[in-house]
Length: 229
Image (cartoon, rainbow, N blue to C red; front, side, top):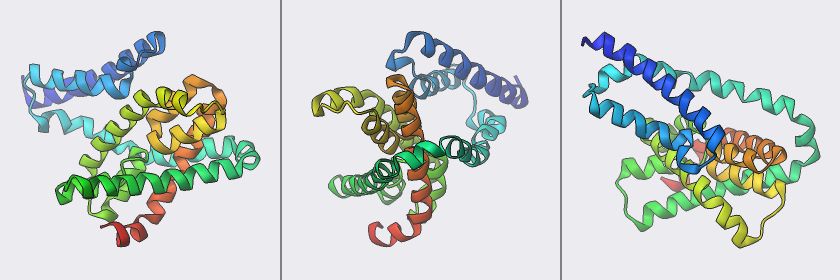
C-alpha cells in the first residue's frame, strides 16, 4: 500500500476511532473508555499492527493538530455565553484560576527538581496543568517541546479524572463550585468533561476555570520562565 493510501487510511481511522469510542463512553461511563485514554491506545496499536511509518500517519492527521488554533479562539464562545455566571461568582472562579495556575506551575517545578529530569522534559512539564492549545503555545517560553508537552497534558488529564472522586470524598468537598473550579484548574479539558458528569453547574465552572487558567498561563509564561527555568 502506498504512503498516500496509508495517510488517508490513518486519517479516516483516527476520526472514526474517536467518534465510536466517544459514543461508547457516553453509554457506559467507565473511566477506561474515556476518549482521552482509549483513543491514543487504539491508535498506537493500529500503527504498530499495520506497521505504518509515522511520516505517513502524520501526513494528513497533522491537520487535526492544526485545528487547536481555531479551537482556542472558540473558547470565547462559552465565556460570552456564561458571562452571567462569571459576574455571579467572580471570586470563586478567580481564586480557582490563580490557585490552579500557581499550584500547577510550582508542583511541576518541584517534580523536576526532586527527580532531576532532563532539561527538555523539565521545561515541557511546567505547563502540563493547562489545556493543550494553551500549553503548546506557552511551553515555548520555558524552552519546552510542544509535542512532549501535549503528551504530558494528556497524562495529567487522565490522572485528574481517576483521582478526583476519591480526593473529593476524602476532603469532603461537595460544593459544585469547588468541584468545578478544582477540576478545570487541575485537569483542564479532561477535568471539565469529568465535572460535567457531576452536574451542569460543575461542568460550566470547570470550563470557565480551564479557559481563564490557560489564558493566564499564555500571558504570564514569559514572566514565569524568568523564575522557574
